[in-house]
Image 1 (cartoon, rainbow, N blue to C red):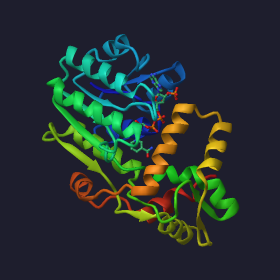
Image 2 (spheres, protein in one colour):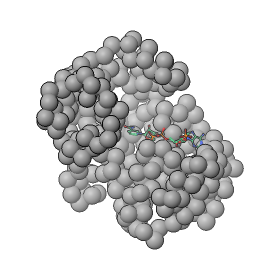
Image 3 (tube, rainbow, N blue to C red):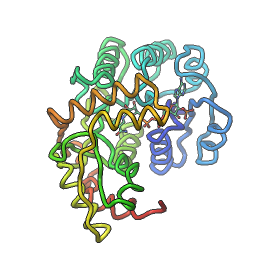
Amino acid sequence: MILLTGAAGKTGKAVLKALLAHNCDLDVCVLVRSEEQASELKRIGAAKAVIGDMNSMESYRRSMRGVKAAYHICPNMHPQEKEIGRLAIAAACEKDLEHFVYHSVLHPQAEKMPHHWNKMRVEEMLFESGLNFTILQPAPYMQNILASREIIYSEGVYRIPYPVTTSLSLVDLLDLARAVAIVISEPGHKGAIYEIVGTGGLSQLAVADHISDVLGRGVDAEEQSLEEWRRTAEKSGLGSYQVETLVMMFTYYARYGLEGNSNILSWLLNSKPSSLYNFLKSDITNEI
Ligand SMILES: NC(=O)c1ccc[n+]([C@@H]2O[C@H](COP(=O)([O-])OP(=O)(O)OC[C@H]3O[C@@H](n4cnc5c(N)ncnc54)[C@H](OP(=O)(O)O)[C@@H]3O)[C@@H](O)[C@H]2O)c1
């Protein structure tokens, strides 16, 4: 049995589906917060669901019963990311798990972004744990662009809170999920740290051009000021830790960009990762 934490989130659901598609006999136990999430993931195919809290050692102990490997996904922008990692690793040591696979991030070394830096500290805990581990370091997902779909359609604008020349590598979450399934199900990946990157650096002007091409209408990239972004985020109810962390991330992107290399993902998948154009073609035109 494989344990999947953070299972009801965007990444978790994609990983669950990919694990089951890769090996339909695989038993997956999901750690979730509510009955509704447990039922939804069981409908998708999870063999077992444990309702608990990722801040609780007792929840990890319950969810790791009969488990031989874990894929650990910390909830997005969580202020207790290090503590959550520490508990998951301690429980895996206690239960003597054969393999612990950690969902990190591209360039966790970037100290100016707290959620990257916290993931680096969790990676360090793994080095010191004695566990067999694999670390995956994904680039920002192409799926993040879909959050702007309504504005793209209504205003013909792709609006981002950093300069339009900012260069970012991206990855299709479905490619990332397939890579997770390979790393968990197949031998030979223990001790590895893999960057999971689908594209070279793309400016936001290039992203808008791809959107234009796919939609067959003009779409312009437009920088939104951080102050305006912050006002909208606060009005939407996003927590202050998340707002401040995202502001630091956007400031970092604006100064340095975030670029990786797709060689490792191509090798893992044994095929070229999805291009942004192909991703947009199948996803941005979906229901709005
Ligand atoms: N988005 C990207 O481009 C990107 C790129 C690289 C890496 N990452 C990393 O990917 C990870 C996952 O991101 P995501 O967007 O998939 O996350 P997400 O959609 O926010 O999902 C997080 C899940 O964890 C659950 N959760 C929150 N607090 C919990 C707790 N205390 N105990 C148990 N469950 C809890 C949430 O439940 P509720 O729904 O009930 O809140 C949700 O189901 C993050 O660490 C992020 O840094 C993201």
